[in-house]
Length: 329
Image (cartoon, rainbow, N blue to C red; front, side):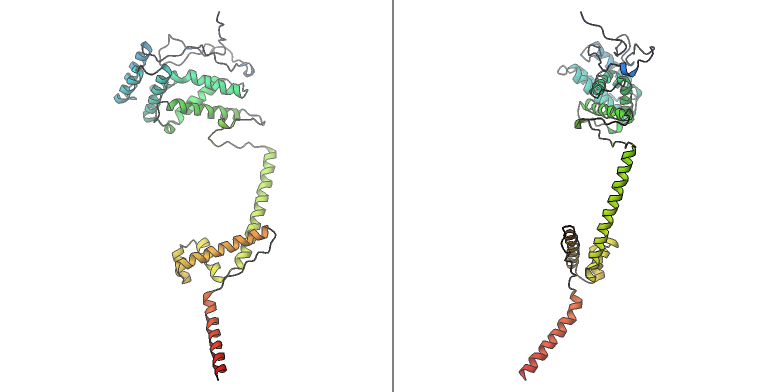
């Protein structure tokens, strides 16, 4: 003898309702059961519309053909071919039809398409929600979370991609996961909850305001500021040890935001030479800072300036010529 389900915790489908009406909650007029007594098990025996070729599919197709403002004739024909395809089972038909209805809803925001999406998918999505809540030992009512799921479906249709026939099933499963995690965070009382990696949400998590967290964040900010000042101090120290041409090149490119071509024109050197000057100047600063962190002397020496060395070379050449002349005499 098959045991009967508890009507206070089971969502039933009334076959006497038209396909467009939402599932009837038999306990809607009863007092709300305390959260700690809410069962998270949704009995799998609960019937749902099975999209096998027959009366249900014909009724569904007739209703879709009546929604001319929401579903185009091409879409109606495409959905009809899906329902008449003998190679598909009921679940495959439901997924494919739901994908086409969601695409129509994305384009036209029709209430009829959204109502059909609820009828075709609310039961198995409710089972998914209940399973995830039970996994985290939550006492929340699965039907409340299910309403949030469909609210998100209605709110974000622009994020739907209908390239795959089972696109709505995959997309709605992701919404179920994110909605459940968001609901768990909103119900948290400051404790920590271990969430498996595969269930982590793609959306950024809101920061919880805790006294200890504020102290840690303030200390981290202070430490980060102190280290940053140390880096700036060392950079300025080694920057001042560069030659005038190296400092001018870095200032033009990194501070004045000039292009390499403009900086080369200002310094009166070739573009290739400017790139080499900037590269060597940056490498000197980086190498010197690394040596300081390793406890070694910085060893940052300015590069030789060709313009300043030219008079020295000329004077040296003259002295050498004079010396050679005196020796010859």
